[in-house]
Length: 479
Image (cartoon, rainbow, N blue to C red):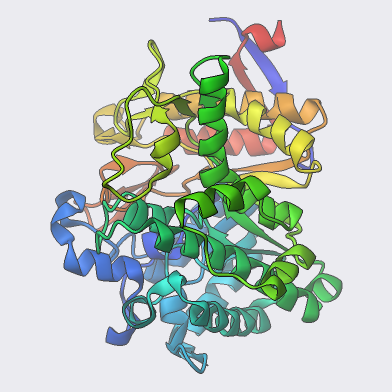
């Protein structure tokens, strides 16, 4: 296949990401500091691949200096992670800081900066404290919003002088979608109204933290910015027919615009209120809260893009005896001949980078944004090791190249995308799949004391960062 050399803009960020709960492990964690993910793992361990979960993860909490050394070797300029809310405090009601964990975060941030890596910090990556989930219903409660605000203030006070990139949530739609909409994760409760309340409360929490951020003058003092990391599922209708177009619009309304619109535009779509009222799933809100959302939009957004979502109009009647689900309006469409990542069960469609970029430009005021996650999980990567023991992950290099190609095309057309963050810096624990699918530039060898080693993609990524150019297939977009 003919290749083309593509130039990356000089100021374009090329980094990598990982979260606290997926990497740190429980070393030093107090019994009262379980997060929702820890609670799920303890109560439902058998569903996690080979029983691996957050208990040890990659042991980043003890090996962060070693890992940051690899970041420096690769040449990462930016690294995104989270602070584990459940571990940062010992008393969630009064926001009493756990000095042991907070000191670790201090040291980790300092180590990043000393090695030339810019820290990007997310305040919540599925790490709502378990006790708040059990006693208050987690993000279903407005009280949790206030406790989260107290937590955010403590974190930003402590690290605001060093962290320039802040994010309120990573993928705020995910936990409640798995738990309350699809009921496939602990504690397995199908409750669409609860799902919608979680969605709203996280949107409100984002606005309140943005307001706090402005009151603390972190932008003026330290040139910092605050945003949110969303995972819009770029939605494609089966056909150009009106019924399929409407199906895609409804999917987009429930799963994408429910977070994109309030965060960026400061308001919820009227269509969402109409359909919520129709199905009696409207979240509880006040006009004062909607005003806070209106006045406190984000500075920028991170977008996690992995695969497209394809839908069609329903071809069967909805069973009115079951609670309302957005699938009332659509069915999933299986595109014939699609390219697949067979290990993850996800379609590979790099053009979604361009399509989402154009949408951000045309529908969301061309707000500043970046790819906060994109990557390829592959099972049993050890079979690709060469005689030197280095995993030859050419499939990952191709995956990144093809997605980056379409992203750069969007940038060339005026889309305000500022960077690309690979998921992930290293192999890590994923919900349920645990270490089954590997995503990292750095291998974590579970059979040998979690030893680290660079994959072929790490060398390629280093070259990409240094040269700001790469080769990709020459197809229709560059003819």
